[in-house]
Length: 258
Length: 283
Image (cartoon, rainbow over all chains, first blue to last red; front, side):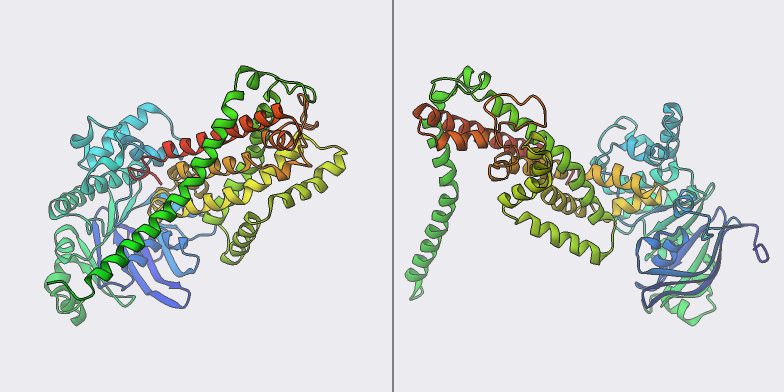
């Protein structure tokens, strides 16, 4: 199990393939996600980058047609081991989605603490502490501290997305997956999310799927370029954007296709 | 500068407007007529005695429908106990679990059951409960109304759960919340108003049923002392009074019908009230 493990890697992905029925969506991808760093996944639509991301916390299993091969280890633990449930994996690897989805029946504070409460944690002091701590981490505290009990859907789109990030952080995951977290937001809200990502990497390992090349260049340390389900190139972001070794990567990052 | 057939087109336009308006009025007219008729015929018989006294002996004047009013509420309560859990949980299964083939057959069966004549339900429960128990009973009456509610509640529950965006399920599962907690605390909670609406409408629908009660609840001129005895219900008493030769009973039948209509109206208004801000947040 531990033969090729890099100590600074949070996730080791080895020969990962994902199928939806007969469609081979991710093809034999191997890469190591560095701990406490931001790894961006880029590529044109339909290249399998979202599927790859969802396989990292077993969210692809929601599709009954989905099937995977290969191995993924989270700090050495096989997340597809028989005796590990998807619920356990998702507690350690959180996710933020493209469309902000705060629960409409809950207030701001209820949204932040929902992951803890529904996993049996009801200590008020702890919940209050975690609420402030994660809302501060999500750079939302100052904007909502006077109306924590207002409905979550009364927030603006950008605030809702930061609330979703706070909600994901509140269960203290080791890795945070982000699936185009800013693509539905205006430029100002987008730049707030990007600043936030750079802040969060001090404590978290982040994998972000993005369509926005500038975002990948600004916010990430490592970049993986996917094309037609294959990992074409993976390396430090500066190298991918300035001197990629593959022609297809260069064409994509310079906007010649995709 | 009018087109040659301008007048003709304008006439056609008016004509269609009048035709559709007439049809729209025809939808509302029966309700107004029924309500007007019930009020003029029945309102005078509504008094305190109507709600507090038992029916008087054959042909005697006065008396009330207290037992039938209470009986109807007991039957509705029993029906809810049978119909709501099975209907709601069945709807949850259809929406959140299950293979498509099995679900298709359940949906198909539920749609067929929704179209089964209510007297047929009465016969079924007569065979299932009344014959083995050797007597009609409040229990059998409640069960038959509950059976009728199941497919109604199941289909509406499934439909409102399907309206909950998949993103909420994903967000919850991604927080490491288990599937059943996600369903109960996130999905059902988001759709709760819709589910309650479906339940109330199903209750309103069965509250006025007469046919299935004829040989299950059977009716009772006094109080039922246990659920194993026949019980009075407003639709049954209205039916019995209406076909009787006594003027006073006719008036009471009108009054009973008015009360029953008001009950159904109250449930419907309650539903409107509950769902009035549906576009603000919930489904």
